[in-house]
Image (cartoon, rainbow, N blue to C red):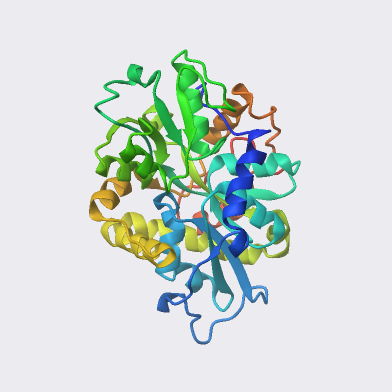
Length: 370
């Protein structure tokens, strides 16, 4: 386990949350995804689970959320849910998705580890549970090869991360500390200048030369490569077995208590989606891209999609020990008071589903409910 990889937040997350919420204010907490896919239609003769009309599911328009993208586009979630209709909302940032979960605007969501930790700790352990994993990897340090020739050349450069205290910001600040360099986590100033930049604008900033590189998830990393960037470091190389959590599945505790059978149905859909993705990588890649186009109006070009896809592993294991490490890194950076994460996981339903499928169960690193 990497002993030092950092960040999250205490003070910073509140400020970081404000910007995405303002940007999304016109459409509530997230953008309502279009419902015009024939695969999403409720099958004739199917029945509602727990008598529930609708389950509200949130995810990001990132390839690291491809389990949700594919599960939706292929109709896998809807098939698992019967006549309980799956409705969807897309998000650009973790804090806004946590706000939506707390407000009841979504019930279940795909999200990164840092906002999940922050949402749990800020609510004193009462808002959410992590109920499964979804993906590992898919994060890279991409640089301008004319300005940065080696890892030691990162010192003195301007490197972007998606948001103060987000999962990649945590990892980059921790890597900086590992080099023996110093950066003020809040301001981003120091031996390296950390520039917090939305993934949507980072490629333009890179092309314009206003940043020298970025520590970002896919597909942003491959977009930078398409603009002439070079992958200097794949974050997976820093972790044991080259695995670390990039996407979790969370649920509001209220919804979990009231509708465990619906949660089970969504997890069945998630496990089935990952199984189909891993058995049909080319078709799954196309399916994820089709849903991205439906959600955003723009598909990824092949030169971005192909390398991005190969760097992500789609798994059901939430890799709980790596989430615990990320929380420790946040504390080390001074952006989070030492959290009590006991109870952040409830993997009982996931393990029930995995057993039924004849697959190996997963571990909560002693951070599960009692």
